[in-house]
Length: 301
Image 1: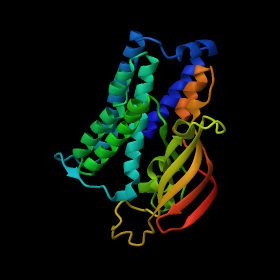
Image 2 (image 1 turned 120 degrees about the vertical axis):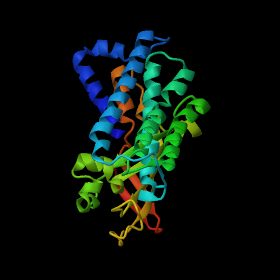
Image 3 (image 1 turned 45 degrees about the horizontal axis):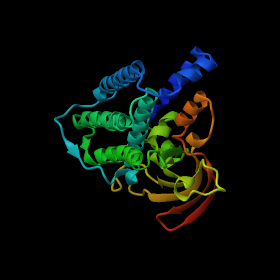
């Protein structure tokens, strides 16, 4: 799913080469009222991309593994729940993308929430069903709960506050574990970015002024709470092939920037900021791990 969001960045870059600055700025301006042409383009594009992605997964990924009757699995204790946070993140970001594109088309707020924010949940449910018919994986209710949580995090804030006061963000750094199991944790930066849970950190980035209404803190400054894990060579903590895993949970406190709150009249910059807002901005951070050790990171990413 992170790859899917990356495709959006590519499309934006291509668009910027096809339009002049002024025309692109006008094109990216959200419509004040429902623009039927834009709405239809959004729906057709999203349905087409989702269909192509699912067909591609079926032919290029699932085809390499044996099929089975539909089955469920319980994988809730694997990878110290880092994979579940990946589901929460994907569902949240796809829901945010769906709502934002409908906002661009001038759809009502209720339709943005009902049809836009559920984009991630619908797509990931289809992927989960495909997992259920694969002998390699299986339908995971824990994954589905994580998908629902991501959608709920976005939709709930829109219903409660009409804005995203708490963002879900991601950061990554390379680790030594991928070299030990490149088939499982990734071979090279691109694969490791998606597969190596040891290097991933998921953040709840809360806007300070949305809650405290201060006059001396810039409106775009956030307080971020992160979760990561380390020492994992396999998902199963009791895997007999890897008996000496040194698995720990990591909790972080840091600052962040909400790029969407930086004021600009350029719709091009607003769009770029919106895309980049999935990434936690590097800042100093305090780490507390599950062994009770405290560590200061002068620059954490």
